Length: 150
Figure 1 (cartoon, one colour):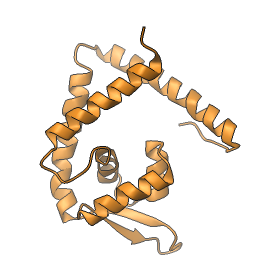
Figure 2: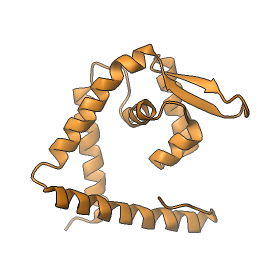
Figure 3: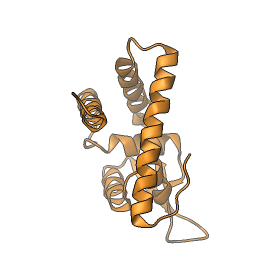
Figure 4: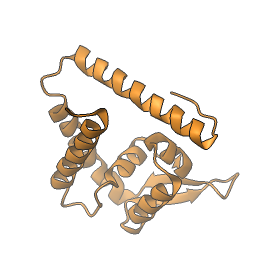
């Protein structure tokens, strides 16, 4: 019998493998596609906001952003009011590749949800978000942080 954790991990691994194989011509490492995709949809997002959006630690986000910057896909701009804050934007190269990445992400979602009705897809997303929120609350409780659930 599979647990929620096993199924979730298997889904994530398989999605990453599909993305990697479909975007192998891009010089972006596995796992950095998520960062690239979110930046492409939210140009000007701060690194902190990016971490929060993806539910990923700041150091992991910093490494991924550094890699995307070094490969010429993303550029950082300091906030005019707070120089500690970096806002992230796609470069010309990043904008050129963004439609391809978005198309591949959509194709993967289509494959993953094949055979599900709209109602089933909505219910699945609702349930997955419920599980995610439970885990976020528990992690925040254990670390003594205040949280806001979306």
